Image (cartoon, rainbow, N blue to C red; front, side, top):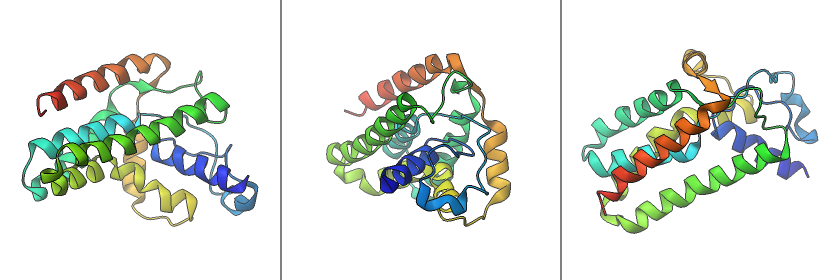
Length: 184
């Protein structure tokens, strides 16, 4: 049970979910004082991964690719996206969506490397850069290590969640898939 709660908490962190409290496993109540349930923010990790793949297929130089990929994360997070009071990671449907979104993102990254193995370095840098702002939440919320606080404040401030943002999510997914299809 504790492992499942810890996994759900990690998945929520990877999905831009801010200030999660509901899924903290009983064995990690020491973190509950640091975490308050105030926000339900979600830009699907799948879209960040797709953006990283597209950039990894487009930009050759990793030194140029890395900052562009990180910037793509913030660009996606600043457009209206799925979330709000009608959606909550504390309920089973939200947890299932989070779980499948993480699996989808991982499958896409592995699939991209399988399709374009010659671009592995660029794909790795692209996906890592495009998902890094969310990955930085792992040590902050799971282990209580606080660093990069100005980045976290900025990341939270740009989030624009709306219950109707699923349309934006699906549009972003469609555009990114069309871009990837050009590389096949």
